[in-house]
Amino acid sequence: MLTHKIEVVVEGGNDITIVTLSGLAEPAGIHALLTELDSMAQQGAALRLLLDETDLRAGVMGLSDIQDIVGEWRKASALKSRRIAVLASNPLIRGLNQMFRIFANVENKGSVSAFSNRAAAVAWLVRPLN
Image 1 (cartoon, rainbow, N blue to C red):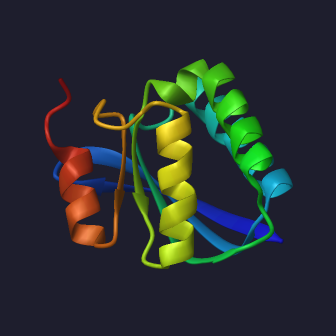
Image 2 (cartoon, rainbow, N blue to C red; image 1 turned 90 degrees about the vertical axis):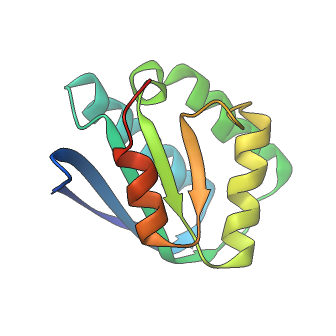
């Protein structure tokens, strides 16, 4: 089961919403998380999100599950306007993130990026927005 904790920290004068994920990466939990994060974004939550997936384990997820998640991402207009850094050291979790970013066509667009180092993720988040 996917669980998460949400907190806001200030780094370099910028609010960063940190979402710490743990448990199994499974479609239902990810859909619920996307809905919650988009709702927060609609209410004006921080423009910068750090998804810390350090304690996340790969669950059963197929290609169609990732395509469904991408479909939901495309509907999350408020969330898509945020800068999102994903912190993942597990190669399987990094691979799932990479598939998502490719299918969602967010590669090299400056809105979503993945990191294996927290300091690098935070530095990317707090650099000036274009």
